[in-house]
Amino acid sequence: MENILLLAHTEADGSLGKPALEALATALSLGGALTVGLVGASTQAAADQIAASGAVRFLAVTGESFAQPRYTTDAAAAEALCRAADCQIVLAPGTSRWARALPGVAYRLGGRVDTHATSLALANGAPAGVPVVTRWFYRQRMEAVLTRAQRPWVVLLDPGCVAPWSGTPGAPGTATVEAVSVEPPATRTTVTGYQSPKSDEQTIRPDAKMLLVAGAGWTKKQADGAVHAAEAEQLLLGFLRKAQASLGSSKSLVDQSGEGEAVLTCLTHMNQVGQTGSTPRHAKGLSTCCHGEEPHVVGWRFVNQRRAINLDAGCGWARGKADVLYVADAFEVMRHVNALLGA
Ligand SMILES: Cc1cc2nc3c(=O)[nH]c(=O)nc-3n(C[C@H](O)[C@H](O)[C@H](O)COP(=O)(O)OP(=O)(O)OC[C@H]3O[C@@H](n4cnc5c(N)ncnc54)[C@H](O)[C@@H]3O)c2cc1C
Image (cartoon, rainbow, N blue to C red; front, side, top):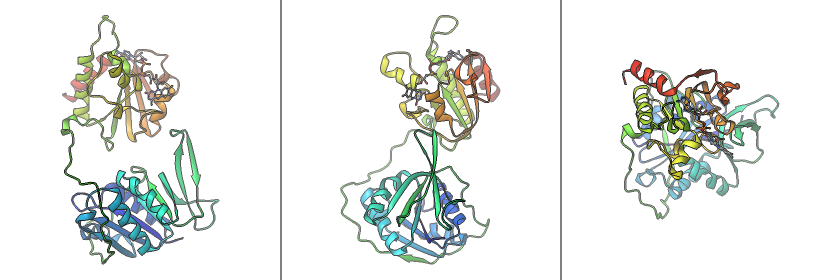
């Protein structure tokens, strides 16, 4: 097996995040000599966190200039680490920070990059010791298995695809870290702080066990001839808060805000699941008031158990797209569910 460099940036608290530990687990599974390259304001704590992993070498670009995500500084740090490590395979978690910087680094090194990999492994049929990448194309409809001859080969591994490395409980180590010095390049971007939504306004939770999806039916006239958008919003948010679920939407529902129809203010296009939306990964999903058409359902590819509530027994979910379909009024069902949850 060729030598591997794992590139990881630290989180704000100086530790390594879950995506980095997932990439570490993948790197270790390949069996080559592993070098770890760290970037951050301080890197010793992150190195110590994985000192017991079996990595043979720790390199780090450390300093305040490399604390913030920014193309110029991240690319300079990663390039210097790749040159110092001199490994054929460079693996990194597919965080927004690395996704922005590493394709440029691969170009500078004369190598190649593959993004959105879901695995990197030694596979039957490939030349001995040469790993293969799996990744999805055409909105998760086709899975490709591919390898490359060019080196260095930079691979960005999508978060959530493998169990993170968890180490030996109670056995933190002390890693010997070799400093790689990089003259901070001139920057035009100054990070002045973060603005995040209040935690109770946050509806997209990638790590949630459950995905609740809302469809356009929530804003359609109901049996009494009236629209009940306000109650719909309250039912959805009540469930989200109690179940700490993530909120997805159909395209029709999020598009309605631009068409002057009744809207749910808790939804934006960021919530859209499907062919032209996202493909979230959750253990369970519940679709409500959504028809289950193919361009929407393709976004459910990585939801393990799928359930749907629809008044229409002939909806798309009934045609093999859901594990369980409740033919029922979603208002009634969610009122009852929320009452059971105490929402
Ligand atoms: C190129 C292309 C890309 C697309 N990409 C996407 C995409 O990324 N994501 C996406 O979502 N769509 C996408 N679409 C659109 C998709 O084909 C559908 O039009 C859309 O998903 C329909 O949304 P919906 O099911 O919420 O609405 P509708 O089709 O209007 O369905 C509403 C459903 O609510 C049910 N309902 C109403 N009231 C109740 C109630 N009280 N209880 C239970 N059920 C009730 C109705 O029976 C109905 O089935 C795409 C289309 C194209 C052509």
